[in-house]
Amino acid sequence: MTAVGQEARSLLWPTVFAVLGCAILAALGTWQLQRLTWKEGLIRDASERSREAPQPVPIEADWTRLDRPQTEYRHVSLSGTFRHQDEVHVFTDLPDAKGPAKGIGYWVLTPLVQDDGSIVLINRGFVPKGREDPATRAEGQVGGRASVTGLMRWSEERNLFTPADVPAKGEWYTRDTGAIAAARGLKRVAPFFVDADASAPGGLPQGGETRLTFPNRHLEYALTWYGLAGALVVVYGVFARRRWNGR
Image 1 (tube, one colour):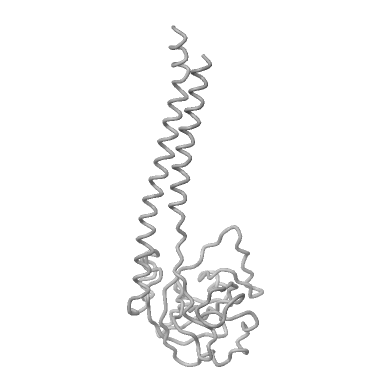
Image 2 (cartoon, one colour):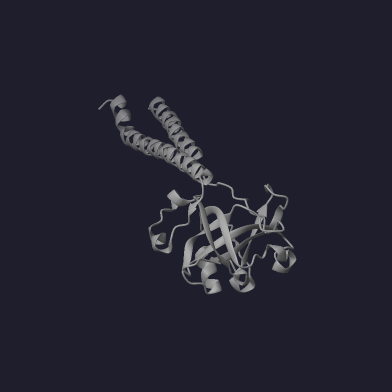
């Protein structure tokens, strides 16, 4: 076998692995572009739902059949009686508030008992630090029957930087309907909560602070995978050229 033939043979497996690697990386990039299209459609649909006229909140019998992506930010209406004694305060930072209150503070989540006895947690809105005590905003503790319109939301997902909730101390860092229901001993609680459209009497809690947020880094991921594929081509080209020239 000639020296040229031997060198070509020595490049066979590196070439196979390089081609296979590029194919996989390119496929991952294409998949992320497909996910980008899907996510943009999801964001568009959620934005449209949030602007629609309120429709009745899903009844208890339908809760297990709800599809999260298709119901997130649905505009709904409901009525019942607030259980203010079971409200919880979820720590948050609201630097770009739509209303006058902003900065470090809390979301106030209060159970609303509907006529059939089922419960939906209502995120009544934001209160700044120092106003979490209901006594400091007594006017907003609405008694009797109340009507609410707002946007359906699902329990927040944790990440590595989310502190653990400590219900015994009243320390909450996620709006988690299941955990709140368990801590307060509530039964027949919806798996979603509702962000109130409007503020309570007196201005606090300050409602209408919902942001339509969907993590969407698919384009970034796609460019990363395609960039890795391109880098692999360059590395292989340099390797093959040196191997060939050094034969």
